[in-house]
Length: 197
Image (cartoon, rainbow, N blue to C red; front, side):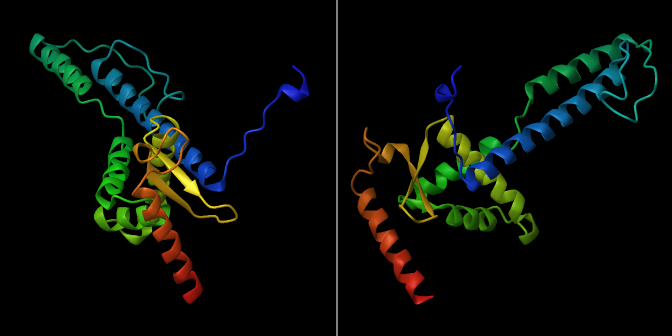
């Protein structure tokens, strides 16, 4: 491959933070799943679990206990019940939150507004702000790049971006009425408050 064929992908600091938060969440979820699998294998017996690979506090050998039919039935139903309850973490919650906030506001919103609403509406303590911010950024990143349900609009030379629903946009990626007027009003108000400061 020629050097000219290679493409450079540039990401903003916000997107980088969002991507990092996504991989951190995936790492934690995977680690949690491995611990759960190790616990279930220990309960069910019959399989040796490598304690260094999965858990440090697991016994060196796991032997299959002789279980009564009743105990075996309850173990099987426990496994089935767990399979039905399979959860994917907090992602859908935050994605739904972002979409609901945009629909309720019925206008473009800034990331800072979403962070503030998340803290207030989800009753988060001040020390939970970094994790909340990362979760919101992560979900916004997925909604934008994977689901294509939201997009961001920025102004040249300005750092702040406005989040919009993609259904508020036309095929060219421009906001349709009345959302384009609402965005203009928001920008005007922002300029006024910036000058007042």
